[in-house]
Image 1 (cartoon, one colour):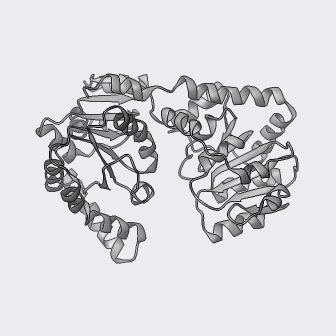
Image 2 (image 1 turned 60 degrees about the vertical axis):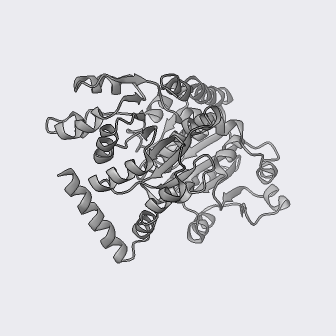
Image 3 (image 1 turned 45 degrees about the horizontal axis):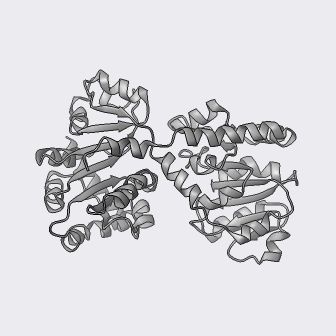
Length: 407
Protein backbone atom coordinates (compact mmCIF):
# COMPACT_ATOMS: atom_id res chain seq x y z
CA UNK A 1 0.00 0.00 0.00
CA UNK A 2 2.86 2.36 0.80
CA UNK A 3 4.56 1.83 -2.55
CA UNK A 4 1.21 2.14 -4.33
CA UNK A 5 0.78 5.50 -2.63
CA UNK A 6 4.19 6.58 -3.94
CA UNK A 7 3.20 5.63 -7.51
CA UNK A 8 -0.04 7.57 -7.15
CA UNK A 9 1.94 10.58 -5.97
CA UNK A 10 4.23 10.30 -9.02
CA UNK A 11 1.18 10.16 -11.27
CA UNK A 12 -0.29 13.33 -9.79
CA UNK A 13 3.05 15.17 -9.99
CA UNK A 14 3.26 14.32 -13.70
CA UNK A 15 -0.35 15.33 -14.20
CA UNK A 16 0.23 18.66 -12.47
CA UNK A 17 3.31 19.28 -14.61
CA UNK A 18 1.29 18.52 -17.72
CA UNK A 19 -1.14 21.26 -16.74
CA UNK A 20 1.64 23.79 -16.19
CA UNK A 21 2.29 23.53 -12.44
CA UNK A 22 5.74 25.19 -12.14
CA UNK A 23 6.86 23.40 -8.98
CA UNK A 24 5.92 19.99 -10.41
CA UNK A 25 7.78 20.80 -13.64
CA UNK A 26 10.92 21.77 -11.73
CA UNK A 27 10.72 18.60 -9.66
CA UNK A 28 10.44 16.32 -12.71
CA UNK A 29 13.25 18.15 -14.51
CA UNK A 30 15.46 17.70 -11.47
CA UNK A 31 14.62 14.01 -11.16
CA UNK A 32 15.85 13.40 -14.72
CA UNK A 33 19.35 14.50 -13.65
CA UNK A 34 19.73 12.40 -10.47
CA UNK A 35 21.57 9.36 -11.80
CA UNK A 36 23.68 11.37 -14.21
CA UNK A 37 24.87 13.45 -11.27
CA UNK A 38 25.76 10.32 -9.35
CA UNK A 39 27.61 8.79 -12.30
CA UNK A 40 29.69 11.91 -12.84
CA UNK A 41 30.06 12.89 -9.19
CA UNK A 42 30.80 9.71 -7.25
CA UNK A 43 34.57 9.19 -7.09
CA UNK A 44 36.18 5.80 -6.61
CA UNK A 45 37.82 5.32 -3.22
CA UNK A 46 35.87 8.12 -1.49
CA UNK A 47 33.60 7.36 1.46
CA UNK A 48 30.42 9.41 1.20
CA UNK A 49 28.21 10.69 3.98
CA UNK A 50 24.67 11.20 2.74
CA UNK A 51 22.35 13.85 4.14
CA UNK A 52 18.70 13.94 3.11
CA UNK A 53 16.46 16.92 3.86
CA UNK A 54 12.96 17.82 2.79
CA UNK A 55 13.32 21.52 2.13
CA UNK A 56 15.13 24.69 3.20
CA UNK A 57 14.27 24.50 6.91
CA UNK A 58 15.66 20.99 7.25
CA UNK A 59 18.69 22.01 5.19
CA UNK A 60 19.46 24.62 7.84
CA UNK A 61 19.29 21.84 10.45
CA UNK A 62 21.67 19.66 8.45
CA UNK A 63 24.24 22.40 7.80
CA UNK A 64 25.98 22.36 11.21
CA UNK A 65 26.63 18.61 10.90
CA UNK A 66 27.72 18.79 7.26
CA UNK A 67 30.06 21.69 7.87
CA UNK A 68 31.56 20.16 11.01
CA UNK A 69 32.23 16.88 9.18
CA UNK A 70 33.71 18.80 6.26
CA UNK A 71 36.02 20.71 8.59
CA UNK A 72 37.05 17.91 10.96
CA UNK A 73 36.90 14.87 8.64
CA UNK A 74 37.84 16.17 5.17
CA UNK A 75 38.43 12.66 3.79
CA UNK A 76 34.67 12.14 3.55
CA UNK A 77 32.63 13.24 0.56
CA UNK A 78 29.22 14.78 1.26
CA UNK A 79 26.05 14.12 -0.72
CA UNK A 80 22.97 16.26 -0.13
CA UNK A 81 19.50 15.35 -1.42
CA UNK A 82 16.25 17.32 -1.36
CA UNK A 83 12.62 16.43 -1.72
CA UNK A 84 11.27 19.95 -2.30
CA UNK A 85 12.04 22.04 -5.40
CA UNK A 86 12.10 25.23 -3.33
CA UNK A 87 14.74 23.77 -1.03
CA UNK A 88 16.80 22.39 -3.90
CA UNK A 89 16.66 25.65 -5.86
CA UNK A 90 17.86 27.62 -2.83
CA UNK A 91 20.79 25.34 -2.00
CA UNK A 92 21.87 23.75 -5.29
CA UNK A 93 25.16 25.68 -5.21
CA UNK A 94 25.96 24.92 -1.57
CA UNK A 95 29.76 24.75 -1.36
CA UNK A 96 30.13 22.15 1.42
CA UNK A 97 28.53 19.27 -0.52
CA UNK A 98 30.17 17.36 -3.36
CA UNK A 99 26.92 16.18 -4.95
CA UNK A 100 23.53 17.91 -4.64
CA UNK A 101 20.42 16.44 -6.24
CA UNK A 102 16.81 15.46 -5.65
CA UNK A 103 15.88 12.33 -3.75
CA UNK A 104 14.39 9.88 -6.26
CA UNK A 105 10.76 8.95 -5.67
CA UNK A 106 10.66 6.31 -2.94
CA UNK A 107 9.95 3.20 -5.00
CA UNK A 108 11.82 -0.01 -4.31
CA UNK A 109 13.62 0.16 -7.66
CA UNK A 110 14.77 3.75 -7.17
CA UNK A 111 15.82 3.15 -3.58
CA UNK A 112 17.92 0.12 -4.42
CA UNK A 113 19.50 1.77 -7.45
CA UNK A 114 20.33 5.02 -5.66
CA UNK A 115 21.80 3.33 -2.57
CA UNK A 116 23.84 0.91 -4.70
CA UNK A 117 25.30 3.70 -6.87
CA UNK A 118 26.16 5.92 -3.94
CA UNK A 119 27.04 3.21 -1.40
CA UNK A 120 27.35 5.76 1.42
CA UNK A 121 29.43 5.21 4.54
CA UNK A 122 26.46 6.44 6.57
CA UNK A 123 23.25 8.39 6.05
CA UNK A 124 21.43 11.13 7.95
CA UNK A 125 17.71 11.79 7.51
CA UNK A 126 16.71 15.15 8.99
CA UNK A 127 13.65 15.72 11.20
CA UNK A 128 10.50 14.27 9.56
CA UNK A 129 12.10 12.26 6.74
CA UNK A 130 11.03 8.61 7.01
CA UNK A 131 11.15 7.15 3.48
CA UNK A 132 10.41 3.44 3.92
CA UNK A 133 12.01 1.94 0.80
CA UNK A 134 15.20 3.97 1.16
CA UNK A 135 15.50 3.01 4.82
CA UNK A 136 14.98 -0.66 4.00
CA UNK A 137 17.56 -0.48 1.19
CA UNK A 138 20.12 1.07 3.55
CA UNK A 139 19.42 -1.51 6.23
CA UNK A 140 19.76 -4.39 3.75
CA UNK A 141 23.25 -3.18 2.84
CA UNK A 142 24.16 -2.66 6.52
CA UNK A 143 24.70 1.08 6.03
CA UNK A 144 24.27 3.02 9.30
CA UNK A 145 21.42 5.54 9.12
CA UNK A 146 20.51 8.18 11.67
CA UNK A 147 17.55 10.44 12.31
CA UNK A 148 18.65 13.94 13.32
CA UNK A 149 16.69 16.66 15.13
CA UNK A 150 13.55 14.56 14.87
CA UNK A 151 10.56 15.28 17.06
CA UNK A 152 7.60 13.01 17.72
CA UNK A 153 4.01 13.60 18.78
CA UNK A 154 1.32 11.26 20.04
CA UNK A 155 -0.93 11.80 17.02
CA UNK A 156 1.66 10.67 14.48
CA UNK A 157 0.96 7.47 12.56
CA UNK A 158 3.76 5.57 14.31
CA UNK A 159 1.85 5.61 17.60
CA UNK A 160 -1.54 4.59 16.24
CA UNK A 161 -2.86 1.06 16.68
CA UNK A 162 -2.84 0.66 12.89
CA UNK A 163 0.67 2.10 12.47
CA UNK A 164 2.56 -1.20 12.69
CA UNK A 165 3.81 -0.98 9.09
CA UNK A 166 5.11 2.57 9.53
CA UNK A 167 6.96 1.61 12.71
CA UNK A 168 9.18 -0.54 10.47
CA UNK A 169 10.70 2.68 9.14
CA UNK A 170 11.74 3.78 12.63
CA UNK A 171 13.33 0.40 13.33
CA UNK A 172 15.64 0.88 10.36
CA UNK A 173 17.51 3.67 12.13
CA UNK A 174 20.69 2.76 13.95
CA UNK A 175 20.05 5.71 16.26
CA UNK A 176 17.56 8.55 16.58
CA UNK A 177 18.84 11.90 17.84
CA UNK A 178 15.64 13.61 19.00
CA UNK A 179 14.86 17.12 20.16
CA UNK A 180 13.17 16.44 23.49
CA UNK A 181 12.51 13.95 26.26
CA UNK A 182 8.84 13.56 25.26
CA UNK A 183 9.93 12.16 21.89
CA UNK A 184 12.21 9.67 23.59
CA UNK A 185 9.43 8.52 25.90
CA UNK A 186 6.95 8.15 23.04
CA UNK A 187 9.39 6.02 21.06
CA UNK A 188 9.93 3.83 24.12
CA UNK A 189 6.20 3.00 24.15
CA UNK A 190 6.62 1.23 20.79
CA UNK A 191 9.83 -0.50 21.78
CA UNK A 192 12.35 1.87 20.18
CA UNK A 193 15.10 2.63 22.67
CA UNK A 194 18.14 3.48 20.53
CA UNK A 195 17.35 7.14 21.15
CA UNK A 196 19.29 10.10 22.55
CA UNK A 197 17.98 13.56 23.41
CA UNK A 198 20.50 15.89 21.78
CA UNK A 199 18.33 18.89 20.93
CA UNK A 200 17.92 20.79 17.69
CA UNK A 201 20.92 21.51 15.45
CA UNK A 202 19.22 24.72 14.28
CA UNK A 203 20.46 26.41 17.46
CA UNK A 204 24.02 25.74 16.33
CA UNK A 205 23.18 27.04 12.89
CA UNK A 206 21.76 30.38 14.08
CA UNK A 207 24.67 30.81 16.49
CA UNK A 208 27.05 30.49 13.55
CA UNK A 209 24.93 32.87 11.46
CA UNK A 210 25.23 35.41 14.27
CA UNK A 211 29.02 35.03 14.30
CA UNK A 212 29.33 35.70 10.56
CA UNK A 213 26.51 38.26 10.19
CA UNK A 214 27.26 40.83 7.53
CA UNK A 215 27.60 44.52 8.16
CA UNK A 216 25.10 46.35 5.96
CA UNK A 217 26.00 50.04 5.53
CA UNK A 218 22.62 50.89 4.01
CA UNK A 219 20.77 49.50 7.03
CA UNK A 220 23.20 51.26 9.36
CA UNK A 221 22.40 54.54 7.64
CA UNK A 222 18.67 53.80 7.93
CA UNK A 223 18.81 53.36 11.71
CA UNK A 224 20.88 56.49 12.38
CA UNK A 225 19.19 58.85 14.77
CA UNK A 226 18.58 56.56 17.72
CA UNK A 227 15.00 55.44 17.13
CA UNK A 228 14.30 51.82 18.09
CA UNK A 229 14.10 49.38 15.16
CA UNK A 230 11.36 46.85 14.47
CA UNK A 231 12.24 44.07 11.99
CA UNK A 232 9.40 42.11 10.37
CA UNK A 233 10.91 39.01 8.76
CA UNK A 234 9.28 36.50 6.39
CA UNK A 235 6.20 38.71 6.35
CA UNK A 236 2.93 37.81 4.63
CA UNK A 237 -0.09 40.02 3.96
CA UNK A 238 -1.91 38.63 7.00
CA UNK A 239 1.07 39.58 9.16
CA UNK A 240 1.06 43.13 7.84
CA UNK A 241 -2.61 43.39 8.83
CA UNK A 242 -1.41 42.88 12.40
CA UNK A 243 1.61 45.13 12.79
CA UNK A 244 1.18 47.93 10.21
CA UNK A 245 -1.80 49.64 11.92
CA UNK A 246 0.38 50.22 14.98
CA UNK A 247 3.32 51.70 13.08
CA UNK A 248 1.06 53.80 10.88
CA UNK A 249 -0.15 55.60 14.00
CA UNK A 250 3.03 55.52 16.14
CA UNK A 251 6.00 57.30 14.65
CA UNK A 252 8.56 56.48 17.31
CA UNK A 253 10.01 53.45 15.53
CA UNK A 254 11.99 52.63 12.40
CA UNK A 255 10.41 49.75 10.47
CA UNK A 256 12.19 47.14 8.31
CA UNK A 257 10.02 44.70 6.34
CA UNK A 258 11.41 41.60 4.62
CA UNK A 259 8.58 39.89 2.74
CA UNK A 260 8.49 36.10 2.50
CA UNK A 261 7.80 36.53 -1.22
CA UNK A 262 9.79 39.08 -3.18
CA UNK A 263 8.05 40.24 -6.33
CA UNK A 264 6.80 43.54 -7.69
CA UNK A 265 3.22 42.87 -6.66
CA UNK A 266 4.14 42.22 -3.03
CA UNK A 267 6.51 45.19 -2.83
CA UNK A 268 3.92 47.57 -4.28
CA UNK A 269 1.25 46.25 -1.92
CA UNK A 270 3.43 46.79 1.15
CA UNK A 271 4.51 50.25 -0.01
CA UNK A 272 0.90 51.32 -0.55
CA UNK A 273 -0.02 50.32 3.00
CA UNK A 274 2.82 52.06 4.83
CA UNK A 275 2.27 55.66 5.94
CA UNK A 276 5.41 57.73 6.05
CA UNK A 277 8.48 57.64 3.84
CA UNK A 278 9.11 54.17 2.45
CA UNK A 279 12.18 53.09 0.42
CA UNK A 280 13.40 49.87 -1.21
CA UNK A 281 16.74 48.37 -0.24
CA UNK A 282 17.96 47.81 -3.81
CA UNK A 283 16.97 51.27 -5.05
CA UNK A 284 17.64 53.67 -2.16
CA UNK A 285 20.65 55.95 -1.68
CA UNK A 286 22.27 56.60 1.69
CA UNK A 287 20.56 59.99 1.97
CA UNK A 288 17.18 58.48 1.08
CA UNK A 289 17.35 55.75 3.72
CA UNK A 290 18.38 58.24 6.41
CA UNK A 291 15.18 60.18 5.74
CA UNK A 292 12.93 57.11 5.53
CA UNK A 293 10.57 55.62 8.10
CA UNK A 294 10.32 52.19 6.50
CA UNK A 295 12.89 50.11 4.64
CA UNK A 296 11.56 47.32 2.44
CA UNK A 297 14.04 44.52 1.77
CA UNK A 298 13.33 43.61 -1.85
CA UNK A 299 15.95 40.89 -2.23
CA UNK A 300 16.87 37.56 -0.64
CA UNK A 301 19.77 36.55 1.57
CA UNK A 302 19.95 39.50 3.97
CA UNK A 303 17.34 38.80 6.63
CA UNK A 304 19.54 36.82 9.03
CA UNK A 305 22.03 39.71 9.06
CA UNK A 306 19.36 42.41 9.23
CA UNK A 307 17.95 41.01 12.48
CA UNK A 308 21.14 42.14 14.24
CA UNK A 309 19.99 45.76 13.84
CA UNK A 310 16.61 45.25 15.52
CA UNK A 311 15.29 45.94 18.98
CA UNK A 312 12.11 43.91 18.45
CA UNK A 313 11.33 41.32 15.79
CA UNK A 314 8.21 39.88 14.21
CA UNK A 315 8.45 36.56 12.36
CA UNK A 316 5.69 35.88 9.86
CA UNK A 317 3.66 32.83 8.89
CA UNK A 318 1.74 32.45 12.14
CA UNK A 319 -1.52 33.52 10.52
CA UNK A 320 -1.05 31.02 7.70
CA UNK A 321 0.76 27.72 7.24
CA UNK A 322 2.94 28.18 10.33
CA UNK A 323 5.66 30.44 11.68
CA UNK A 324 9.02 30.74 9.97
CA UNK A 325 12.40 30.60 11.70
CA UNK A 326 12.10 32.52 14.97
CA UNK A 327 15.57 31.44 16.15
CA UNK A 328 17.25 33.63 13.52
CA UNK A 329 15.83 36.65 15.33
CA UNK A 330 16.02 35.36 18.92
CA UNK A 331 19.77 34.72 18.69
CA UNK A 332 20.33 38.50 18.64
CA UNK A 333 18.73 38.90 22.08
CA UNK A 334 15.44 40.62 21.34
CA UNK A 335 11.77 39.77 21.94
CA UNK A 336 10.11 37.99 19.03
CA UNK A 337 6.45 38.36 18.05
CA UNK A 338 4.63 35.68 16.05
CA UNK A 339 1.09 34.60 15.19
CA UNK A 340 -1.06 31.85 16.73
CA UNK A 341 -0.24 29.00 14.34
CA UNK A 342 2.79 27.83 16.29
CA UNK A 343 1.62 24.79 18.29
CA UNK A 344 3.83 22.35 16.36
CA UNK A 345 6.95 24.44 16.87
CA UNK A 346 8.72 23.45 20.07
CA UNK A 347 10.98 26.51 19.99
CA UNK A 348 7.93 28.81 19.93
CA UNK A 349 6.43 27.14 22.99
CA UNK A 350 9.70 27.29 24.89
CA UNK A 351 10.42 30.86 23.85
CA UNK A 352 6.99 31.89 25.13
CA UNK A 353 7.61 30.09 28.42
CA UNK A 354 10.90 31.86 29.06
CA UNK A 355 9.46 35.29 28.20
CA UNK A 356 11.31 35.94 24.95
CA UNK A 357 8.48 34.97 22.58
CA UNK A 358 5.21 36.84 22.28
CA UNK A 359 2.23 35.20 20.61
CA UNK A 360 -0.42 37.62 19.38
CA UNK A 361 -3.92 36.99 18.01
CA UNK A 362 -4.43 40.18 16.05
CA UNK A 363 -3.71 43.89 15.57
CA UNK A 364 -5.24 45.00 18.86
CA UNK A 365 -3.20 42.55 20.94
CA UNK A 366 -0.06 43.47 19.01
CA UNK A 367 -0.56 47.19 19.67
CA UNK A 368 -1.12 46.53 23.37
CA UNK A 369 2.09 44.53 23.78
CA UNK A 370 4.12 47.01 21.72
CA UNK A 371 2.94 49.86 23.94
CA UNK A 372 4.01 47.87 27.00
CA UNK A 373 7.49 47.29 25.60
CA UNK A 374 7.83 50.87 24.37
CA UNK A 375 6.86 52.38 27.72
CA UNK A 376 8.93 50.01 29.85
CA UNK A 377 12.60 49.74 28.77
CA UNK A 378 13.32 47.23 31.54
CA UNK A 379 10.59 44.92 30.26
CA UNK A 380 12.02 45.17 26.74
CA UNK A 381 15.50 44.40 28.02
CA UNK A 382 14.38 41.37 30.05
CA UNK A 383 12.43 39.89 27.13
CA UNK A 384 15.43 40.33 24.85
CA UNK A 385 17.79 38.71 27.33
CA UNK A 386 15.38 35.78 27.69
CA UNK A 387 15.51 35.22 23.92
CA UNK A 388 19.30 35.35 23.72
CA UNK A 389 19.77 33.09 26.74
CA UNK A 390 17.30 30.57 25.33
CA UNK A 391 19.32 30.15 22.14
CA UNK A 392 22.72 30.01 23.85
CA UNK A 393 21.65 27.43 26.45
CA UNK A 394 20.16 25.14 23.79
CA UNK A 395 23.16 25.15 21.47
CA UNK A 396 25.52 22.19 21.21
CA UNK A 397 23.44 19.45 19.52
CA UNK A 398 25.97 19.05 16.69
CA UNK A 399 28.84 18.17 18.99
CA UNK A 400 26.69 15.80 21.03
CA UNK A 401 25.72 13.89 17.88
CA UNK A 402 29.24 13.72 16.47
CA UNK A 403 30.64 12.48 19.78
CA UNK A 404 28.38 9.42 19.49
CA UNK A 405 29.29 8.55 15.89
CA UNK A 406 32.19 6.51 14.56
CA UNK A 407 33.85 8.80 12.08
